[in-house]
Length: 227
Length: 300
Image 1 (cartoon, rainbow over the protein chains, first blue to last red):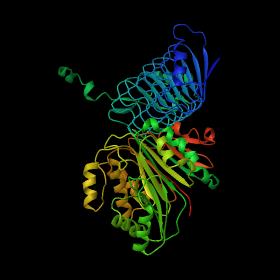
Image 2: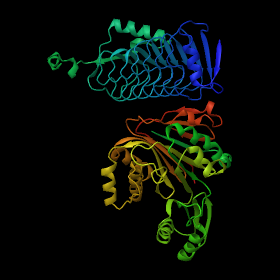
Image 3: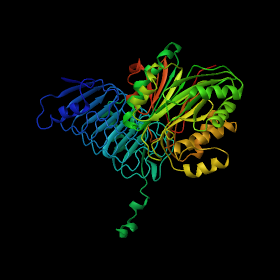
Image 4: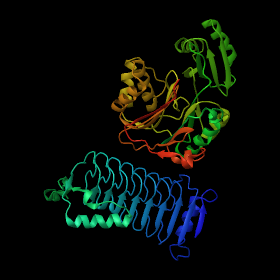
């Protein structure tokens, strides 16, 4: 295992060392010490690495992740795992706003709470939050799944496309065009698998499913002539 | 973009170190605000019926002694003062209103940065590091302190446009964000008698709170009204004689982090600014909710 201490080395040093593993992997396990809320830690990885960040990280931690498995043993600032393509990002503490924003693939697990706009414009990522999510979560979500084991804030799933949202607790309010939907057997199966992958012990039958009513402008075939 | 930091001590034993604890917090927010900085420190209280003013003149060589003597004659009471760079802290055995009016009349070229029993506001244009050094921040003592590093967007980079803004006796405000209805609101406040020194949007928020508090609102009520009447983005930290308050707008896109231990409550725009505090590794760290007023105040 390779250890990088951010008190003596820069984030740029760390990210370059991790990027150097992309063409040929010579060191699979990495440990990052003293992150102290610095931004852009472990960004742009493109290799099957295991990276453990020992402390709180700042903005955009594990952004654009591909293949790597990043675990933050603390909280993260805004935009964790933004635009992730594949791999896993696990946050042991809380995540600030826009967790998993625009992410295309992979799995993001937040073991604490996630702030506002969790999964905003998500495009295929699976997000599992053990705690609550803030307002405007999954805004314009296009594909993937958002699982919330706690409560969701205002305007959940506003202007949603095809993301499936599962919430165990209460939803303060639903956003425009987001509705509660029937929880069928296939959804129980899908949720069971998501919870297993995230290592979260919850009863899938206790969740409700939310999705798009498909009533906004974009969904109307009559509007196709406008293009 | 701007940076906000605040530190409220629960453990009185740390009061002699507040400047030392706070200096790295302010400097850590240089990335968010490199063009000007300032802070409001609370402590060294004057007795009931007396007032402490922070006064500023562009020239460091300004004759503060002459002003103090004229004030003594005009007010017919004792005046003590000390100088810190181009700022003087003046303690007067008179009300805040009469002391401020006296300065305005005797020396219109002098700016009253703050008035109260406890508050001192110090601010200037330049890097936070340089401002901390200019005012010898690390050597300061006090019970609580809030600070700001500015990256100007809505108005010019001037000392007058830098934060904190005084919002009444022992009250001040720092702001991260931008208000969209400040022009109209400024006109409305002017009609109600509030005066402004700049075109700055944050000064309008400060003026708004000043007026609400003058009209009899409690701090909580004034902030609840601010949530209704101010349009735009904001994270505010408000310093009071006994503590500080934090409030974010309903959209909450301007960041804020809070940390609490048995010894202190700390606030910052980013966690990075808190990492030098003792015991931060085991502190309770969380993000304040939107549209929620958080207040920490010591009992008198």
